[in-house]
Length: 366
Image (cartoon, rainbow, N blue to C red; front, side, top):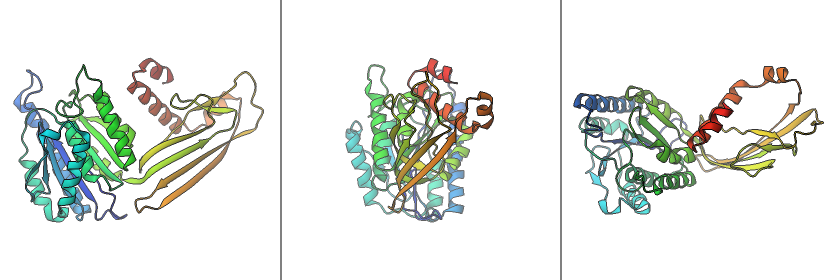
């Protein structure tokens, strides 16, 4: 996991980054072998080391904290502090874990990466495989450490499904997905983005864990271990640009939003986006309310009002207005439409439907 504090300027100075890596299990199945496990762990270690090396060269004033979790959640700090182990007795309480993370962050004074680099590399090199995956407790603790610093980012990297503490997966317990939805709503409210990197081929329960990333505005990636190095770099470059983002989308009265998340017949909707990074894209589908009669207009007006808060606390409002010509010629429409936008919107909509189990509908839209 990585977290980025918003208190950095446009040059990337004075920000905090927290890296947390799950301690890989010794044996996933009876067919697993030691060499395979070492290779996977070695790939993750190398990715973290190269990321720190790049950050040291580009942003030596950043502060980096290591957190490791297996059955226990252990904060390794910047390599110079005594190990801090989260109390086992609070592993099933989201609020207590948040409080524990906040308390730790308030008590510690972390060195810059330029000062702590060698100690952090040593900590990463000494990581060993263990068992169990206290993913939920680690995530809650990490979020607590950056609560109050809008614009922070948490990157969760795991090859195992949560099976210990709060948020653990249990076939007879429907609260698992509810917990990660709660985490998503909390991070969205506090201006924190959660992204997830899962190892390809390993059961990690993404259908239950992913809501915390989707709601907060983060990404979900399933990658080969050797691709994680590249993805860590891309995520660190895709920094948060605004929090508390709120969009109002206004259509012509003859049009309505084509989305089950909004009331049928709505020509004006409000979407609480929450956090936005450089690569955040928001798309909407719309349709005619009444297709029995012709639309007797030459063009249709559209307007989007975006309110947001910058990292320095300034509240902003941006209004985008545009009129689009109407045509009954399908060939002309297909020739002049923005295919990239239509493709992006379709990918987002089908992914959303698939995550809700509406696979047939998603295929139909594709």
